[in-house]
Each structure stands twice: as structure tokens, then as C-alpha cells.
Image (cartoon, rainbow, N blue to C red):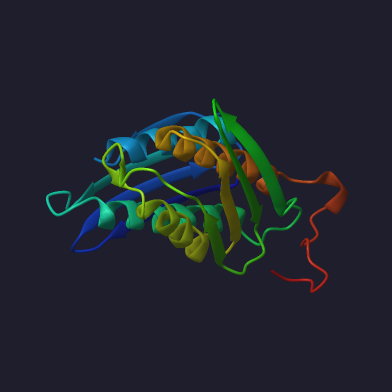
Length: 195
């Protein structure tokens, strides 16, 4: 069973994540940040991950701590569910169109955290999330999931569409990278023999 359950509690947030990598897209998501809920729903639905994400944070200040800590806990859940990462495809990518927008995300579950996010935004917020938090979300996820993420918005006019395309591409890239490749027969996908 490639599943994980993560609890993260700080003075700023309380987060519970449940994840099944081999799910069907079932989700129960309530973070208190509406647009983040919308994006995590895309992660579950398009990545076919069963995901429960429950968070309570200091939203009276702003959504920063909640968005960041959800990403950190979610990354921990992926890391735990992947275990030793034997037999996985390891790398995946996806181009995702959303009306006038096109996004591309490439993921490598390499064990080495790194994130490169290229996006030009037209407004300071999408929903109730500052656009500066989108790169921070992916950076935080990469740190605890121990993966590379390269994400870019090639073009677009509507920031809602841009964010949605980005998260859909991320979901599909993760789905591909986490899949078991039967040809690997339980071997760690690295010339080093370890990730």
C-alpha cells in the first residue's frame, strides 16, 4: 500500500494529510483557503490520488503560513508514500492547456529537492492567494517530497487559468512519475543504486 498519513502542528497551523498514490481521485479538502482547495482538488482529480487535506491556520493574518505548511505536509506525504521509490518511473511531465493558457511541469522524484518556477502574473492575487505564494508552494513541496519540479507558464492572459493549468500539469506529471514501471521489477531507478 503506497499510502501516508501526516500530521503537522505548529503555532501557526494544524494540518492533517492522508494520501493514497494508487487511488481514483477521491478527495476531501478543507484548508480555509478557497483557491488552495480548488487547486488541491485538481491535484487529486487529475493525478488520480486519493487525498484528504484538512488545515486550520492563522488566516486572520494572511494565507501564507497555511499555503506553505500544506505544501510542506503534502510533500512529506508523497515522500512517505513513495517509500524507497523502487520500481517507480521517477520522471514525468505534462503540458496542460486551459483555454488561452498553456503550462508545462516536469517532475523528477530524484531525492534531491529543487524547484524552478517561471510564470508572469497579471494581478497580485488569484482568488484569495497572493501570486507570490505559487512558487513558494512548489518550492516547499519539492523540499519535503525530495523532488525536482520545473514549472512554467508558457503563455496566458487570465491568472486563474494560469494557476489552474499549472496545477493540472503538476498533477499529471506527478501521476506519471509515481507510477510503477513493471520493467524495473522493484529496482531503484538510478544508476547510483539509491535515491
